[in-house]
Image (cartoon, rainbow, N blue to C red; front, side):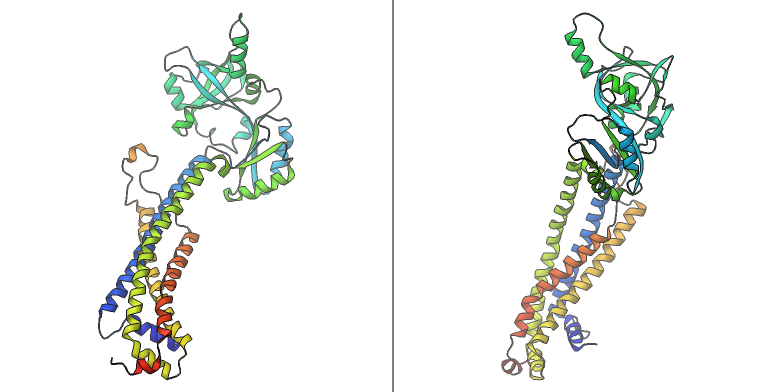
Length: 415
């Protein structure tokens, strides 16, 4: 082994006696370990929350959405679907029409409510959205029959209005309200539907979204043959940005805009990322405090080993090598503290991930029972690099001080 490593290891912990310097060095290692463990646990929990929210929203939103750049609808949805399916990673594509309308019901229940009406194609919707699979009460039937035109609503909305399959309701869109206000005589232009099924996903979504066929939605919102957009489902969620770039290169940017799942909820995701890195910076302060302890302990070692350093220099060891000895000692403290912190942090994170040791307070109000955990390799790498870098930086001053010792004066000093 290189003599610099041997000397640095011996200076770090003497096997013969435990001195005050050894205690301070131990405290420094403990501080680094505590900071690393806290970073691993906190970042893993915040990653877990991020993944949970992302998966929840992606179950409601598409992976990629193509809409009109001008905010209006567009025609030729079939050709746009064919183009989208030719892009790598795109598995499914479906058109949709979306708008807001007033839901009217004459029966018992709550007052009328403004809902988001989505006109969809049942033949292609199943590959993009899980709403068809979540329609357990009744059937996802939007066809026009002798009984009327089908509509599927959320279970929460059905309970609020007292609606079950077979009941009737009406939708009044903004263009319909405008016509109603401008036409003094005549009945309001209501579009009536028959409830065919009730789906259950998330309560907030269930209360605000209803599904009808695309032709009925086009008539309701007076869109002619236009659709609001085309939604895509990918084989890999992480390929959304690549698919977006590919589509933007193929489509006219003056007509179409491509949005990924991140773009659809960008403000929320940005806030969660900001909270993650903000918490990380705060926890790094623990390692910084430990780094100050490293400066103190290594400086005391330099003072204690001043005569040894002089002897080494007299034997021909260069100032550069003296400096490297104490830099290695700082590195050893960082490596030892990081390894211990990794063991503690990963153990706690894995225990929480598999056994849910720490439940959420008031879990009845949440969709999960315990703090979620997701361990990221990139986060672990950054934590290790930051911890060891701070320890190395802390060793710079003691190493420079040791290298500046004059051998003639140091050898004459008493031990």
